Image (tube, rainbow, N blue to C red):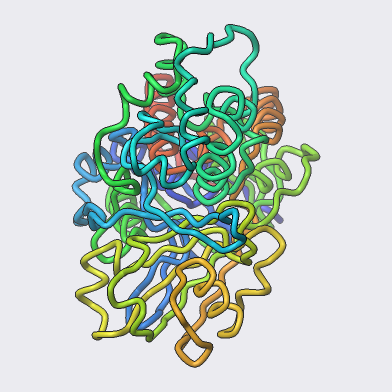
Length: 453
């Protein structure tokens, strides 16, 4: 006979959002249980052994557009060191008129691919003089007060098609795993959208917000790998008294209960902090399947990479024929990785285009993609190890987010993670902490909450 166990809050999903909420509530004395279907907590902050390192197999950096992650590390006293990327910066690869692939450093001052100074030399190098002159006209165009268009339409209308094709679209695909025509700027960078509306110009808004730093440096990481953030937060939540049960799939949820295989957990509040598709399934919402996110982490020994020819990495414009849409040269980006690797050995991450992950699962495919994106002669023999990873539930599209939010509200269930906050730790962590604060303000610790009936 199935039993029912009562708690203050039950959290479904053990990614960074669920762990953050569990820590916040447990340290406030609440009786918290977090259940995670997989055998480990951490969500997309996962490690794997590559080139003798515990390398990130999921997210490897976080945006600094908010102080959310740094605040969490400080408040939870997590024993991790936040680090800045190396100053080399990232590049973009694009098809030149000659048909050959060109590469250039991303503009020093830009946000979501939109430049603060369209006539700056590093912008002209990517757009060409004609494209740069068109982009410079953005300040002269009135900013419509009507319904917000897609990011692609917005960038093309304001800056011209070349900014969209060579900067906005590749950044959107590589960072957010979505096409620019499927999202709005207000969802990806709400502060930039608000600033643009206030100033009447995206160029002026970017100029006001974008620091004069090398592209790619508006992120930070964790020494030893971002996976350590989740590992240490899990440990902090456990020390605070949270119960974390991995390998525990959930069959159904309501606003006050979570049904497991042979047990029901009842609670004053239930939080779903899973991926978007899993959240939709738990709420019985039919949503279109999002394409999986494919990542390949590989060890390469090639002299041509020793000088870090494309800085910390490279993103590919849509007209570049490559199975990989982006490449991160890990030991060029993070000094801790460079110091840990043997001389001549490199750690490279490839982000696969949707539907082309299978092309990157062996040395031949990896070598081809690395050659295309970097211009370095890498042969299959140079590729010493290939670790492919597929994240099937990583992308929260606006329609899915809206459908899940409506269903959760109807059932009295709270949402956390990307399905509620949007993509990235900079959004997810502050949202999770705000949700935990709201839950605390509406409850008090229960007396003897853990009991079986």
